[in-house]
Length: 80
Length: 231
Image (cartoon, rainbow over all chains, first blue to last red; front, top):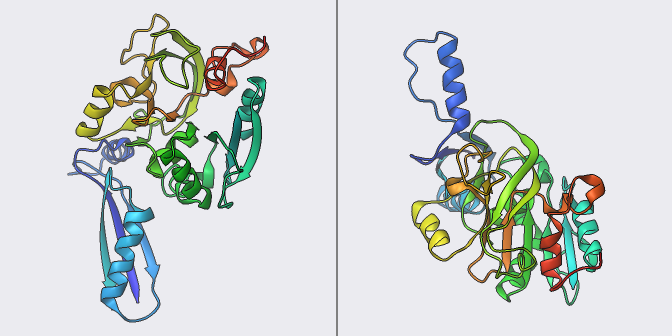
């Protein structure tokens, strides 16, 4: 199985990198760009075929390491 | 005092802080991050500055989950002293020893310069050699020193007097201009509720000799040793 974990900053947390990227996109003349928020994507290969167990394991991975829940939210998607 | 300086892959101020500790009269043991136990009788654990794990994932995130951090958390829970400097502060936050997190500097620039701080209180084991409200001149060198916590945590830190140091100008005024990284309330360092854990972004260990710029950092190590060090 393969999984994708997406970690994003919580609403209201200042994201200076996102702001800088937003400024760069605007200076490139790319039209219609509003606010930009930067996040992280983790593509993870998983052993076994138990989707529920994988989801539990990945949530633990997020809580323990992949995300800092003070400032970040995460989403786990598993491809079967 | 028996101290243990932890070295993580990418730590680079472990030697500097060991020198400052020895100058103050401490016994210093160097401990590798993968070890599971602290040397018997350790009074103070130091998490030094540097770039542990190349700042991968988040600064301090991987080091915060190292083997030795379980022993460090147990040490802190027993009331043992822990000092986290710069990357060590980031590690302490990621390890749950202190609340909040250090984010990217608000202006995205790595800052490396001298910086004045106010000593918010001098009735703690880390600051007794300073005067209340003293303005000290130390170094800062970081790209992720922007202290962030949720409003409830920030209110608790302020309400319980857990802010250790604030960024200030030479007169001790805490202003936006004197804040190098966007930290909330100009916070440069915080204590745990028991005042046995201190995390700070500045580097007191680099201002311990007048030959290399000043001695305002010595007070912290002098305080920890419980008295004045030999001149």
